[in-house]
Each structure stands twice: as C-alpha cells, then as structure tokens.
Length: 252
Image (spheres, rainbow, N blue to C red):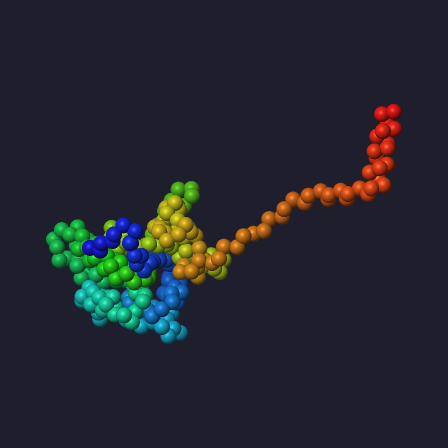
C-alpha cells in the first residue's frame, strides 16, 4: 500500500491501454514516448521498431509459451526495478492472454476457476505496473461485434475475456480504440460510443493518434467582428456657428 498525506499525492507515470485492428499502428505508438523504453512483444511485430534506437526489445514466441507467466513476471519486475527504463510496453496482450489461458486451462475441473486464475494473474500484472510509477503502454487486438442497433454503438472491444480485460485495465488512465479513417489514424476514448474507452488525464474523447502523449495546441479560430459604422467627422467652427444661427432663425 502507498500512503499519501493530504495535498502530498505524487502522480505516477500515465498508463495507456490501446486496442485496435491489425495494421492500425499499435506497435509504432511507442515511438511517441520520449525516454528509454523496454518493449515486451508477444505477437512478433518487432519489425515496426527496427528504426528505433531507444527501445530494448524482448520478443516472446511459442517456445516461451509453456512458462510465459513466470518469464513475464521476471522480466517486468526487472524492468520496474531498473533505472535504465522510463517506459514499459506490453505489445500485444491478446496473444499473451491466449498463452496464459492455454497454461491454465484444464488445471481445474471447474472451468470457471481457470478464468478466475486468468483474471487474477492479469489483475496482479496491472497493479504491478501501476505501482512501478513508470509510464506504461499496453496494446491489444480488437473484436468487431458488428453493428448493433441503429447507431452502431458498442461495436468494438478489446479482444480479451471481458473480466480479464477489466482486471488488467482498471488502473489505466487511458483506454482507447485506434483506427484508420481517410488515411489518418485516430484514437477514440469516448465511452458514450459504447466501446471500451476512458480518459482520466484530460477532457479529450477523440484525437489523432500522434497526439496521444502530447496534445496539439488548441488554436483559436478568429471570428470576424461586426464592423462599426464610421464615426462622423467633427464639425468645423464655421459649421457650428452656421448651425446655431440657423436654429435661432427658426425660433424667431
């Protein structure tokens, strides 16, 4: 337990959970973060980082699957304790979940207990990352449930067991869906769309993907001010005298 006195709460690094379809640029989001990074990759997508010089990569494969939990615990703990890493990245936890479930599945006669163990392990992983106080980026694949209703809300979610997703993502500050539209990448945080989403950092609900870490400056659009009627020029002395004389003539 961490204890903070009133007015003495020290913010930890922000935690980002981004899910989306393949090819939307989830892995390359790590390039937006400044600092020394360690990336644990579970789906073989390390080619996307081949041009980086600030990222240490551990790429797990099927040979690691039988003892993936112990390996992830060991390497994540090492990254947390190391002063050499500022940002910890887990890419892609959908693949990680499937390996963990394969290891747990069948160990209990009651299938519900298998999923409870799955949820417990991911809950502990999420809290471990929060307690690290480092910046964290986690990615996952998405599920497309198809349009539901007339508005299509609630169509997309992270490709994870629902309770496992909730257990892992609970301490995260950002949960959003990355997608492509008209050649640009966007991230949607808005839970009102019915998809998994939240933003505890600021008020943004939809952003360009490259603004995930550093929001773009808001530029005020200048509005055209209504033009005032031109001010009448001051009258000359002679004009003022003539005006007074004319007024007196009317009264006579």
